[in-house]
Every structure is written in C-alpha cells, then in structure tokens.
Length: 363
Image (cartoon, rainbow, N blue to C red; front, side, top):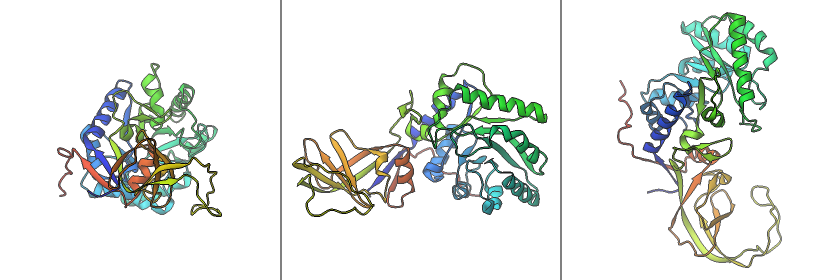
C-alpha cells in the first residue's frame, strides 16, 4: 500500500447522502451533492447516484467532463459563474449554471441557440458574504435583460453565504431570498422551480427550521463527505465524520532539541516563527507536506502534536512515547484538508467498500 493515502469509505458516503436526503425531504428540500472536492471522481459520483440524488453540482468543467465520460448520466449544475471562454463547454457538459453576469448569459444563449438546445440558469443574489451575486436592488433590471433570451430557461434564484466572510444563512437571509422569489414571480409572471438556499453552511438552519419558506434546494459537499456542519464545524447527528481519512508514514524518529541553533532568516515559505526552548523533545518526521495537503486542514491523533511543515515533511512531537519508523499515522480532515489532498497527485486514493457501486458500462 502506498502512502500518503486517502481512505475513502464508499458505504459511509452513501449512508451520509441517504441520511441527508431523508432529513431534508421532510423539509421539502432536495440536494445537489458538490463533487468538486473529489475532482468529480466517477466512483464517488456513482455512490451519490446510488444514494438517490437527482443532480450533481460542480465548479469545474473538467470534472463534469470526467463524470460524463465515465458513463454516468445525471443532470449537472455548474456552481461557479461560467467563464466566457468556456461557454461552449458549459452548454456541452452542464444542464444548469449559476450566473451573475448578463454578458455571460447572452453568450450562453447564443451558443445554446446554435446547438438548438436549452440551458438552465439560476441567478445568484448577493446577500452579504460579498462573493458572487447580483445586488438585490438590481435584480429586476437583471431579469429584464435576460427574460426573453432564446434557449435560456430561468430555473430559479440562489444565494451563497459563509464561504468568504462566514456570513450566517439565518432566517432573515432565508426570508429575504424567499421574498425576492415571490416578487420576481409576480413581476414577470413566471414560476421559479429552484430556490437554492446555499451550501452546507445552510444545514443548521434547514434542519432546525419549522417555518414555511421558498427554499427547496441546497448544494452540499462538506456535510456529505465529512459529516459536519461547516458553519459551526460540529458533527451532524446520524452522519459519519470519518468517511474519508488521511494516513501517512513516519520516516524519522529521534530525540532532538526543541530550539534550533545558528543565525536565523526566513524559512522556505517566507515565515519566521518565534521559538522557545522546551528542552529535548520526542520528534518525528512524517512523509507528508504542503505539496500533499493544507497542513492546517488536518488533525493528528491524541498525543501527537503537529509542530511545523515543509513541502515534503511534517514535523510532529509526541507527549509520552516515540513514534517508530514505518509507523502509519491517521489524520482527520477538514474541508481544506480534504480538498487539497484530493487534488494532490502524490496522495494515493484507496476506495473501500466499493462493491455495489461499480461504474456503468460505457456504450
């Protein structure tokens, strides 16, 4: 077995997905799993399809291509505003896209018309986190400019919160989006099928809400793969938090001074930390570095403390007993840790409990 290694438990991802589908169905909310964190991996995508999802979301055209090329047939949503340079690919690989620019939607319309197909659009509304979205007071004018574009189907509106500044998707934000949906339908005499209430950060609201709203759709990644609520970083009842873990190997274990000696400048990453003399310590090096994972996105087992990292080395200290060379250490992941380790070609991906989730045969 090669290391560092991600262990991906297909059964636990399946059960997390089924649990969320069932919990949110009672609230009148469907989900679109976001596969960008796993680079649109066909095996993981097929697990999600087996769990019963009816659409897949991703931010990268390359991932959409990977999914379709594997033989998986399921509606797809592009969740990053399309690049004009990729409009042809957006029409080819995506059924729906999230949009914030009239110029982009016009290009989508033109390309869809050439191919005689329809493309769905969800207009994103800016509600305070200051990432993507049309300002609420400009929404009517925005719709005026796209409402009659050929081969464009306005599927709904959506919001994204908590990603940039951690703005909470509370009942006030939900109410604002719901009221905007009502106003747009009345103004333009249309029916908005999808009111997308955000990402995994909206789960706390969704699972605890008892009031009627227009929200009927969420785009979920972290909650499915890590079993936690991204807003408060707490486990969600009934979900597995260890569906994906990262294991790496110890390559050195020694007793060393805690204080470096010699004149000091900046390290390889432009850092210069304050260091205090703690005497001799039980130090080990693990074959895992910044080229493999965002080190702040991993959590070591109890008794092991992460001290520093370089491109290829993770330096740790242990409290009582030394690690031994060749020992394997399993780390928990947060979203940044999962995203980066999934994206690294140096981290091996090991699929567990894959039976029953085999990919469809290509025709």
